[in-house]
Length: 355
Image 1 (spheres, rainbow, N blue to C red):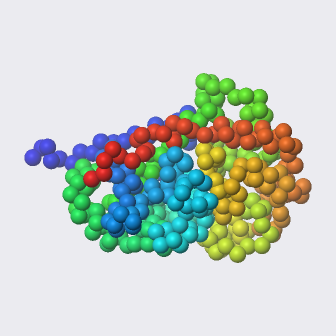
Image 2: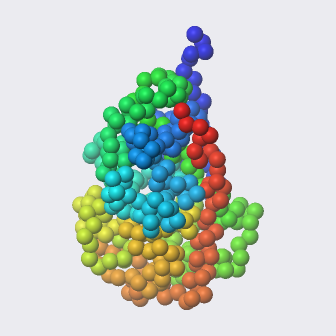
Image 3: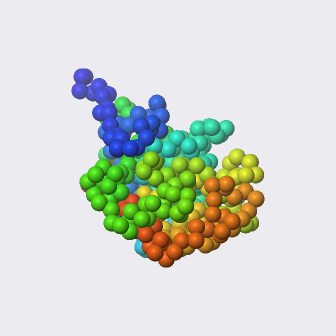
């Protein structure tokens, strides 16, 4: 019948002003309105992990909380200190990274870039593969795709959603991973005070402007090499740096673990600073809980190691040696990167009802 024809509605991601125009959307998983809605349901459905008991539910949103910029956040009672753990209590090896603006990242995922198109393992190349990993990882859902499939297939309301999104009511885990990835790719943050300043609709205070100058100059705090500035609204290069936190290294999940290049020892992705006031704890290991601590580290706490990034220009001085006033100004600027629209957009929150 004509009414049964598979005709999903293309979903258009509006590319904000000054953002890159290239997006990481694979040809075999185009974004559709129906796919995004299905992915949103699965993202928030605690049964996705393959369990139905009330005390055993875990979804992507259990840790990726919208009002905390899609990390768990310091105030989350389920994860004291903002460091998440899996359903069995096993802690994650690293602190969380925000899910915002991942559609503009074509340089791998996770702190060490393990998930990358060039990974020789075909199961570790796509955002979709992270969904598979989340199901199996002991420090996340600690389940398997068959359990997840069994539960989702048993819920009557899902079959019509898969039919609308993918043209078939046959539910597979690959389609679940594709739908969740479609939803995650729509999580664009672009309406902070600083964005509005660039567009001429907001004014920065003198302190915020001073902080901005410090951020984008080598003579100041020298942040922009790794985190960008007005010319890079993502506020990350999505590249990997040893940022002079340590002189000795024991973590087996740094960039070196992926590349085998000795110059990548102790290197990790520069995280996006969008909504940074909500992303604590900071650094790959969550060692800092406040922005003041982070700023103090870059001002006075840098330490040398053989693989430290050459972009750590203030290393010989131990840091940027900011004055108390400059530190306050830099923090004031960083707070302008908070995007309340992103944190409250109902399209990014749980659907009114799950199947």
